[in-house]
Image (cartoon, rainbow, N blue to C red; front, side, top):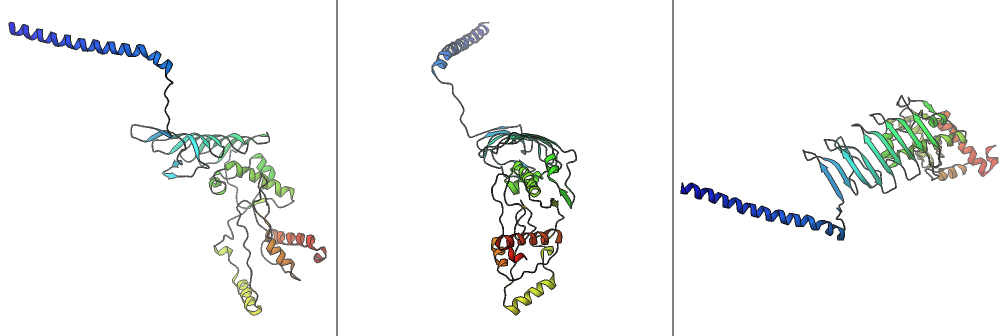
Length: 332
């Protein structure tokens, strides 16, 4: 009986000690929370200052990233270059592919986008050029709808239900571009304009307008042909043989002029491209002044070739224009 009583007394004493310790902790906690308001009133709020913050899922995949700057986006396991160093919020799918976000770029572009697995789905943007708008795209990156505010204040709404590429030998008229029947393929924006799709779209409109103002042929969608390095770019063997023979017999070096290397303008004539400037007035090409001057030094010039409707025709037209500008008598 005494042993049981002593055991119960020992248990009670231990509980009393635990109660004392708990009471002391409680009192200290009350004192701490009591002085916190006064501490907050005299001490500035703390803040987090970081370059990058990642939120990961249960598998460790980064699903939300806030960074300055953001890394290049990854889609399908492949990394692509941003148009400019960008800062903001990146949203990723379960595989770590970028699926949208909000960015502010060093070049002044503001972009908020959400993506399909195959490319951009919707985009709202304000560009450093003064353009602002909203786009909706099909899964294969074809623009199906676009609301655009231009730098001069014009507002355009474009709807393209077909989303198709033009067939070879399709003429592209200015009014068709203005109506949104034909647009630049967004897939070429990275290679031609550092990702600035709207700059390319503006160039297409400017290009077709220049052709119309200068009385030139409509922009034509050509089949692939005469590609540098391919057999279609080679001289016909009989012509090459004649040139080589003349080179040796007359001790006269044959000259070769390569044209058509600028993807922003056609170059039918060997003397000058179709359009020489961009939508914002910057030069993108120039006349072949050296070759023009060389031709003007001859007593007679014989012109022959294929594509009489375009390449030969515009070469003759440009040469006559240069002759008339130099000495009208030479054109008689």
